[in-house]
Image 1 (cartoon, helix red, strand yellow):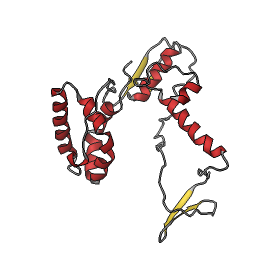
Image 2 (tube, rainbow, N blue to C red):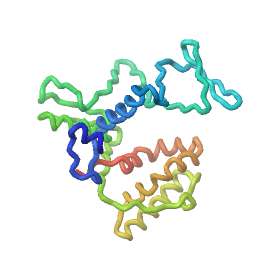
Image 3 (cartoon, rainbow, N blue to C red):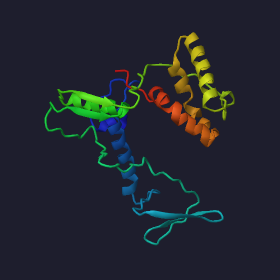
Length: 231
């Protein structure tokens, strides 16, 4: 919130405000830039390709394309999202909604996907006076659900059916939703209450169970987990 204030971005209610995803990206860049400019920082960025990881007794050695290597106690693979190459005559392009320059405000715009990035793109275009048709295309046509003020349920780790698989997990999840609705809440209380346990649930599943989740449930989970601003 302090970072937003330094950029004169108005925030009416911090409890319900949702910054654009583009702003979050700029915020992360800011956080990484400050320590890099500090000579006493523990963060060191090396712009090289890692070609091999060698596991030694008690340490890891990443070997780089320039022939050098690094000695570390731990190694984390944080490669980010992979941009797949285009197929045939299809050109894939990633567009920043905050900086897209249209020739005319009456240009017809096509957005691939109907998630939060689509929402940010449409809002950005409308705020800049776009007056023509915006078409969003996705395989399922699912839109993110809407946030509201809610009270997440409290779950102990022992209450979470770790390793049970997606099918059993869905049945358990629906039981929690029915209980929340009986108390005057809804599914949001359950989704938000699961946040501390999501990683443990994922790690408890086998590769087959994870693939089953991706095939049948991920799209539906995403629209409930990653929701739109109430406004």
